[in-house]
Structures are given as structure tokens and as C-alpha cells.
Image 1 (cartoon, rainbow, N blue to C red):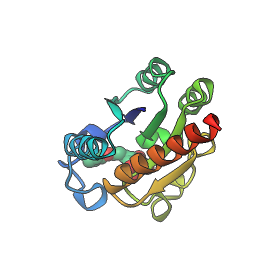
Image 2: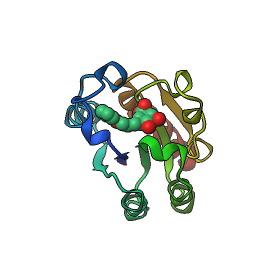
Image 3: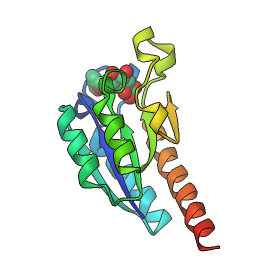
Image 4: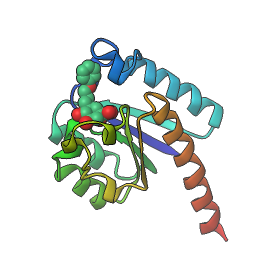
Length: 151
Ligand code: CA2
């Protein structure tokens, strides 16, 4: 099972600024935690991409068109991008949307996500743990789907 973990603008700054909102962990810490979790789940290959550029995120989604799952935190592009959800729909990849902070407890403009309608679901407000839950969920749901397809 191959899963792409995609992070958008400014998430490369994690751990260095605003820890009260985004936590103390760096993106490298989150990658290491996910790789640990993936090793426990055994049959998972992970790829990590972070970009501050919308087009690079679209490219990454297209380049992983044959992969099984996508965990995405599109950062502020969550609230503005149409190209990212279009790419997700176009390649038809199983997607879980993650946000470190609780976007619904913040400014009104963060309450709307263009990604949610094309995702299986959203995890918001649980810091880095949201990525780990997203990986567990995708692993369970994709395994279940594969079993059903075999019947
Ligand atoms: O809570 C999240 O994960 C967000 O996707 C983070 C975005 C924000 O625009 C979304 O509304 C919610 C911002 C990412 C900025 O990341 C930083 C990390 C460290 C220091 C400053 C910004």
C-alpha cells in the first residue's frame, strides 16, 4: 500500500514558530513518527512532499496518480485552491485531510475547505497526532476495500 503525505505552504516552518498553535514538532519529526507507524503496520510505503507552491502540490498528486492513498495538509491553500481538489478528483486517490490546529475554532475564513468535498474525511485540531490517525484510517479502510473487492 503506497501513501503520499503532502504538506503545503509554510508547513516547513513547523517547530520554529507559533508552537502554541501548531505544536513543537518539526515536519521531519512528523515524518519520522509516520515512518515508525508505517513500519508497525508493515505493508506501507510512504512518500513525503512539502511545497510552498500550489502547482508543485498539483504535480505531486499527478505524479502519484497510481498510489493508493493521500494524506494532505494543504495549509492556507485549503481555503483558496480549486486546482488541488481538482487534481485529487482527477486521479481518484483516497484522501484524508489533516489540519494541526482546529480550523473551526479559528478565523471564519478557515472554516471552509475546498478539499473536504473530495476527501474521505478531515481530522482537525489534534496536532501531529492527526497525521498518525490519518495513516491508521487509510490503512484500515484501504485494506477493507481490497478485501471486499476480492469477494
Ligand atoms: O492547522 C493547520 O494545519 C493549517 O492547515 C495550517 C495552515 C493554516 O493556514 C490552515 O488554516 C490550518 C498554516 C500553516 C502555517 O504553518 C506554520 C508553521 C509554523 C509557523 C508558522 C506557520
